[in-house]
Amino acid sequence: QDEFLSPALMEAALMRRVLSSETFRAWFDAFLPALADGRPATLLTPARVSDRTDGKIAHLDGLNLSRGWCWREVVAGLPADDPRRTIGEKAAAIHLDAALPHVTGDYMGEHWLASFALLALLSA
Image (cartoon, rainbow, N blue to C red; front, side, top):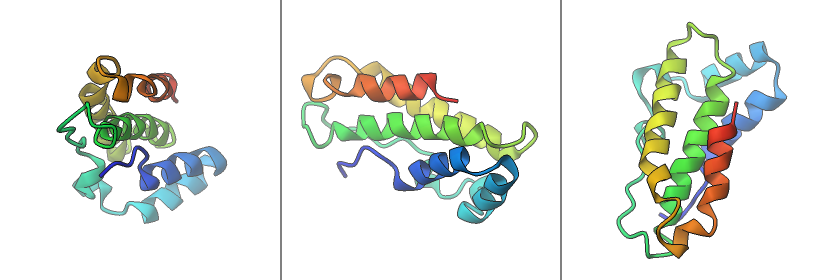
C-alpha cells in the first residue's frame, strides 16, 4: 500500500461541502451504512508504517493525515447528537496521533507531509 488519499473519505468530505446539510446526511447514511457499528474498520484504524525511509511506505503517514483531515470534514456535517460524529472524531484523533509525530524526521515524508498536516489541523 502506498496511497496517501482515502478515496471513500475524500468522496465523503467533498459531498459534505457540495450538498446541503440534510442531503449530505441522507447521502452519508447510504454511503457508510454500518459506520455506527464500527465498519468499515479500515477507515477507522490508522495504517501501520513499517519503514519511513522507504518513499512508498512513507505515503501511509500521508494516508493517516488525509484520513484525519477527511474525518474532521465529515463530522462537521453531522448533527451533534449523531453517534457517528463521536466515531468520526475519535477516528480523526487516532489518525492524527499516528502521523503527526512523523511529519519531520526523514526526507521521504517531511518534504510533503506538512501540507497534509495543515489540511488536517485547519479543517472544519
